[in-house]
Image 1 (cartoon, rainbow, N blue to C red):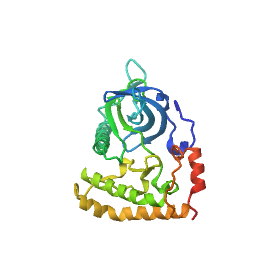
Image 2 (cartoon, rainbow, N blue to C red; image 1 turned 90 degrees about the horizontal axis):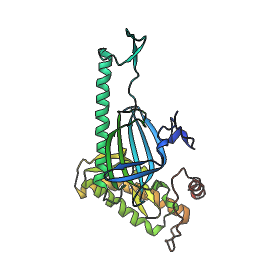
Image 3 (cartoon, helix red, strand yellow; image 1 turned 90 degrees about the vertical axis):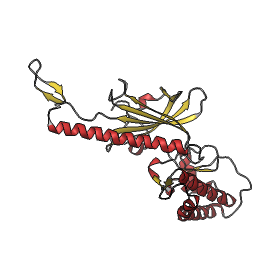
Image 4 (cartoon, rainbow, N blue to C red; image 1 turned 60 degrees about the vertical axis):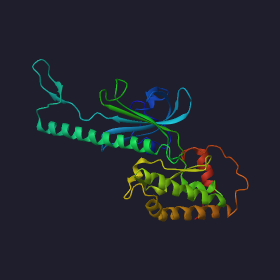
Length: 294
């Protein structure tokens, strides 16, 4: 496959190789800014929407601020059907008169409509929560068509730009936390639930929350775990709804902190730097050294 990515953990982050890696170092204008793609992080094929998705580390060309850029690329939908022609032995055709092809075209339109709704909904969620402090900052989106440098010229190409966000799991945060920090984490979780509820949203991916060791902050970064609130814009309802899962998270964090360093307060915090993602070898070695023993 063209531009196939030869990287570690290929089966998870690049299960079918990569045709998007070739766009590293390229620039794309979105919402009045220009972003340079630095490194592809993952690329996956979504069969439900016949769509290729990829995410890159990037920076804003003028400010050099770190970003992530997500691509949603329509894959070629169906193969051409070869038909006989008076002037040529075989001619590519989509055979529009064929009822099966017409049905396939209707399916293609429906699939694209659903994909469009999903993409715009994701953009709207990140836009509305951008100032919450618990999600990636929203910088803009762009809907366009693929040119000849892409695999399916004329197919849709959608781009979403978000601020850089942590990928370190909150589950592993005890190695960075001290007992006297835990009330602050609990306060963040409650504040996050209330702010999300104000926009009519709940976050149900509690085991997938992220933690920023430098900013000492909780983040929600997985779009598929947002749900519409049953009682939107109701702080009391948000508190009641979140109380149970927050208690579960805090119980796990307290147990982890106590197991690693007891209940010592944070007299001094040593900045360990940016531990990066779980795929980083140094991160893995630290986590293996500090991980709780069952």
